[in-house]
Length: 115
Image (cartoon, one colour):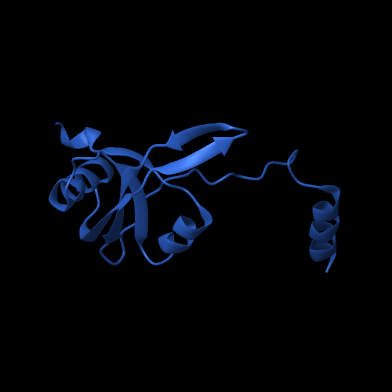
């Protein structure tokens, strides 16, 4: 198992974005990964220093669609705490362009410029 393949994907939810302000990031990891491997993978892939790693297993859930019963597979996720001053850029910040600004926003900008 290669270290780069341990982290499957970041989990982006409202709760995980709140954790980012504190320096905690949540990742979906391979089922057989442990804390030490996750720490090494994050440090290598993102080039940051990791302070702590917490791992939890999510259980599979039963889902129904009408009378058909299926299952959503469980997975392992890791909550990675970075050392102070460290950040990981998971999602790209959208830049506003002239076309993306609404008319109301332009009026506010004009009022500010005129003052």
